[in-house]
Amino acid sequence: MRYLTARKRAEGKGAAGTGTEHLWYMKMSGVGLALIIPVFLVAFGRTLGGSRAEVLESLAHPAMAIVTGLVIFFGLRHFAAGAQTMIEDYSHGTTRRALIIAVTVLSYGMIATGLFALAKIAL
Amino acid sequence: MAETREVERPLSPHLQVYRPQLTSITSILTRITGNALVVAALLIVWWLLAASTSDAYFELADAVLTSWFGDLVLTLSLWAVWYHYLAGLRHLYFDAGKGMDIPTAEKLGWGCIIGSVALTVITLLLV
Image 1 (cartoon, rainbow over the protein chains, first blue to last red):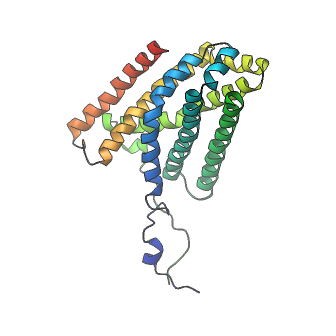
Image 2: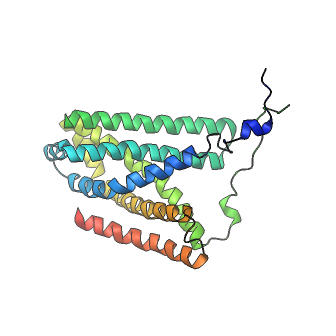
Image 3: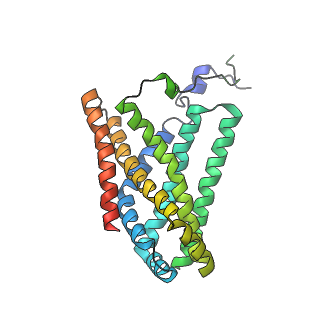
């Protein structure tokens, strides 16, 4: 049996249990998204409203497909990490864990669906 | 021996204990807009899946996204993106330890509100 003092267990972890990893991820994904979101908004806004053939042609363009894929992946991971912070602020125990699992599953499910659709269109 | 049981830690102070201030409202809006954007993300991912599947499926999803209700949700989401964008940059600035005095923080708050509306209008004009 290992003898661990309270300090030893707490050191470097903080209340979140993961140190500053979560905060840093939010900052870095936020900066990354800040670079591509303006491009995506205009490109997507121009694509939306066209016929299916026009939409498929627009999304199949390499730059459009890459930017859309990046926005889907990092946008939804940034969402899940941010939503987790909110959940951790306002709920405890089992509710907290269940909500975090739900948000994580939702975000990865949407990422997989979005990237699958994008691959099917662009390739 | 250190105890391993889970301790009841305090939750964040709830919103109702504060008098609304520009700085707190603009901070809360960052969280609301960020989380609300999942609705637009769901719609767009669904629309992409439909576009990749068939003409009939695309017609259905496209009809929802381009209906007046879809337009309303996506336009509000566009504002939400821009708001969250500016407020996020403001948070990075705060994190660097700058702009924390009340006059500057309030100016930045107005910057987020006015800037997000302006950027929404510009984006709508561009698309």
